[in-house]
Image (cartoon, rainbow, N blue to C red; front, side, top):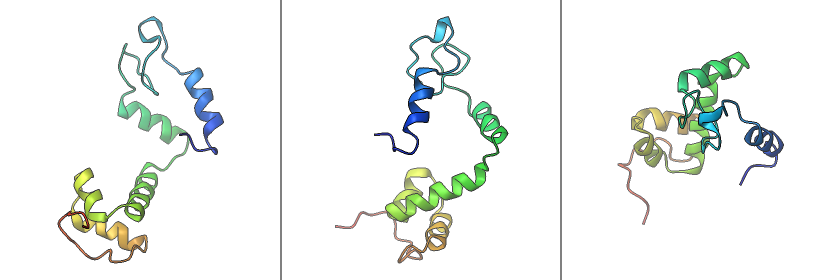
Amino acid sequence: MVPAQIAPMFWDHLHDRPNQQTGNKGSRWLFPGTLPGQHIHTDAMMGQLRALGINLGGAWNTALRSLVEELQPTLVANALGYSYQIIHKHAADAGVPMAGYAGRGSLPR
């Protein structure tokens, strides 16, 4: 489901995606690359986002904080390959209760 706030922009992009040359027609990628069947390279995407004035570090930190507000911080650390200390710092900064608890990733029973 696409959030209502971005739905019009999402559908406009989906119906008029770039890089739809002959080899990329009907690509399954939301952001198709210049090579047929490939997604856009991460460096190219980061360059485009920076050109729009988006602070990538800030966006990443905001995404991490949102994740630790919704999920157990230790699970986020395990899923993303982060150290427990870093993820628990994000959780503490976000005001998550028991953010300092560095359990070893087990789910509550």
